[in-house]
Length: 141
Figure (cartoon, one colour):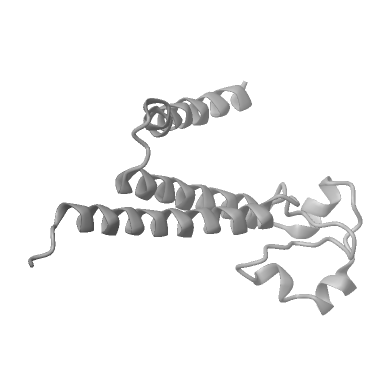
């Protein structure tokens, strides 16, 4: 029951935000700087959520216990050699051994793609703002 309640608590606000974001797309008013800034903001929120999913992957705070619960043997010798790998900010890894990572495979590519989307949207917003400013102001002869 707790999973359903948590899912509903996350889905209702997400659907509302998606509706607010998608309404300009459906009405054709998406090509404004504000829409691109909002999309960049949503991307940054999605980056934060994705990073937290990857950083706190596993069922417990102990990596050894998380590996055991995932049904994989924990190789302490491998973890001792690669101790820096689990403490980096990017790319996120928390390996049990050389072949199994607690961090889902989609997390690091999603972080890259969402970052590119955020930067592209900020660039498009600046470009649209400059173009609209150029067309509204006429040069003095």
